Image (cartoon, rainbow, N blue to C red):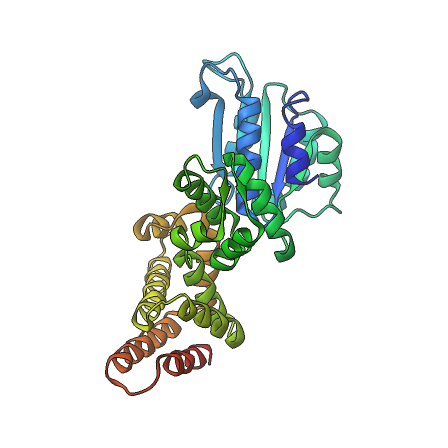
Length: 331
């Protein structure tokens, strides 16, 4: 089942003992979680007591299963037990979960949020018999335009096709950011029923969050072509070379600091708190952290400082200077 089928059906049936949300599109996972919470906690007189959330990487399995077996206190309705980052929890406790699903608790509903969900597992078959599994995959690029046009109706607006395409070009394949921009655009245009290209140009431009992640992604993967394309897009939109270098340097320093904190034995929550990593970007941020060593990041930081000085003193053209920087960062 995909996210659209789930959202249209979740409020119609009776609550199920287990829901599994898996995939790499965090926006869809967020929507699926919101839908199941709204359905299962509707009319609950004590939502805070009925909703129990765990991180599967940090919470012992015994605590989670103990919560499922314990009757709810101070509330007459079922408990909703949510386990995020549940891949390791599932892998290590597959047989216990299979046993649990043969006789699930009548007073609790379990939600597992995973990156990957192997449909070939015996556990997956049991889930499909007694519950629901929802695939939350990132949309293919050719489907983004239709998504933007459909999503704009959520804000009671219609977006022109060319405006939708412009928004995609500026933001990239990140539904969370695109949705925030659609919300802002709907407020910006006021009573006007449509969003056009001009509105997108004025309010959106090239999204910095998308750009910094895609640039550092490309550098980490040594994808010169992709990095050059992003640089060219930034320059086309009038971004100054000093700001582009600063954007890259800002992210490299954050990755470097994250690496230092983790190497000191701290966890990702400590990193996210200190560096104020937004939840929607956390997964991608830590994927990038794992691609580098401290030595790599120190060298790239030095290279960016050197290029920053050259951008202010050298006779090199802006685009050539940035292209040379990309080649060096990717080497």
